Image: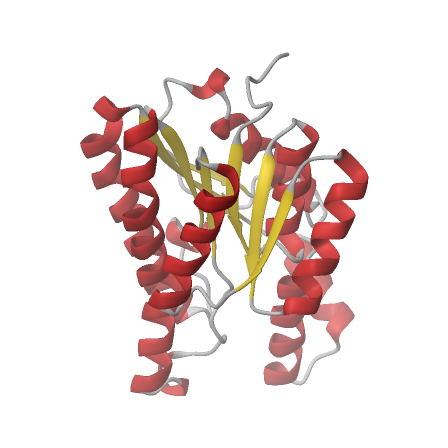
Length: 263
């Protein structure tokens, strides 16, 4: 199936590892040139080298903190200057610290607000005029299964990622006539560094072995395992493609059947 992606340009958050890197690799496999950004300069440059070697596309690695407004402006400007366009924006933000309500002070709430919600607002504000001028584009937000079913000990993520969903739904109606489509993906339990960290935190908080905590978590997943990052990337690539030209304003779980709700 020709996805119509060859030669397009994507800007990808958290591209140095985990889900962001998997999406960058999969888009590059389809011939998309990618700008990847993350805070760790060494890690983002290593990921860029790997993507170039694997798929031969152009890769622009940018060390940037997406909770910083000036750095968002810089990375979008650098991407447009390098490639002349931005067709796809994959908003992928790192998760905030786990904990219950009483664990977090005002500073923690403010950091989560900036990192999870305002970073997406600012990326959208920066790329929408570019996409509008070139005749269209795709914005895909990586959120979490917690937008549909709040998780214990993830109150910061539970609260602010829902805001991203509301933003996307509102923008989808505003931008559809400009051929700018915006959708959300909601990963469940993936085999990533972030997931391992959460399980370790839960093990420490409950004074139980890591393997016991992991087994109990996997037991909640009908497919019986943690998912692979590539399984999310395949959906992201489809939503970015010409084959998904009628899909906007949607929120799609990739959770192995873990969620209990109907929608």
